[in-house]
Amino acid sequence: MSLLVVGSVAFDAIESPYGKVDRIIGGAATYFAVASSFFSHVNLVGIVGDDFSAEDESIFHRRKIDIVGLERAPGKCFFWAGKYSENLNERVTLCTELNVFADFNPKLPENFRASKHVFLANIAPDLQRSVLKQVKGTPKLVALDTMNYWIERTPAELRETLKHVDVLMINDAETRQLSSEHNLLRAARHIFKLGPSTLVVKRGEYGAMMVDKNGVFCVPAFPLEEPHDPTGAGDSFAGGFMGYLAGCGQSSDAALRRAMVYGSVLGSFAVEEFGPERLRRLKLREIHARARHFSKLTQFKL
Ligand code: AMP
Image 1 (cartoon, rainbow, N blue to C red):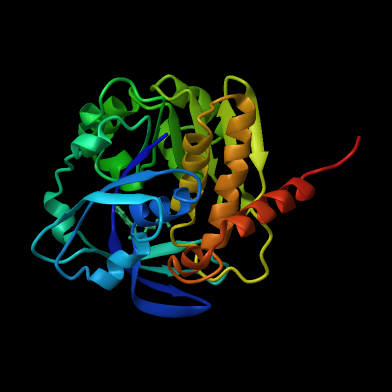
Image 2: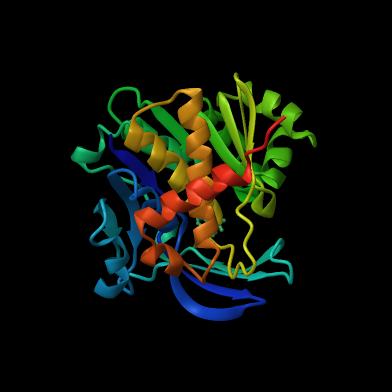
């Protein structure tokens, strides 16, 4: 089954205690598409400027990623710069330049409209809704990511969009902010009233938690000795999660639990190197090997 993603394709400048890069390809849709393409065909909708070269585009080549929905506009790509704290847990945004992203009005190519799985990466909630309106029929699963910027500035638009979403995938701070609840279980109950029936909370080095009608399921983050750059970990997690579900075509509790593991696997590879470099070299057999490692990590007898 095909998977649609709409979101940023960008250049990032990243600084962490492990080093610094001035310009590396990034963007939520980039991480998501590369991660999910290990499991499913991916239809990518986004926008880039004329500074996006054929070499930059090659990140999407030789993968199951259709980029006919990647619009080209005069001007520069979306640019984001961020710096991580010593323990990599905190990040400050140093700069956000919207550039061609400022006038982005996503248009779905005809052959994307039948997508059954949809991931609305972190962009303006009304643009996320406009993408959803262009999808034919009712998709099997719609997931959405958002951030403090939209929760604070466009709360009404976000609430309207959430009515059409099945899975909300956000981090713990965003969960608390959106729900005005500190406790994540109480937050989930609040969020279910807004539309989503599943909440996936991404918790960085503490792993991820899924709450739905079946209860709670938690996966740890893969223990790494030297994570280098957390940029894109959340989007890679979302890519592993949605890619796995689109690929297997199931939505049972067991499939959702496996999707949580594949999300964590892809997120863990993403942080190993700066930008999407580790994901670029990644092989499917490495993904499955790490998923088996996760299984061992969490097994115990009573
Ligand atoms: P994450 O680390 O999962 O939050 O995602 C980081 C990626 O999101 C980077 O590659 C950025 O280019 C992109 N990004 C940062 N801020 C925004 C924003 N306001 N809208 C869309 N994408 C963004």
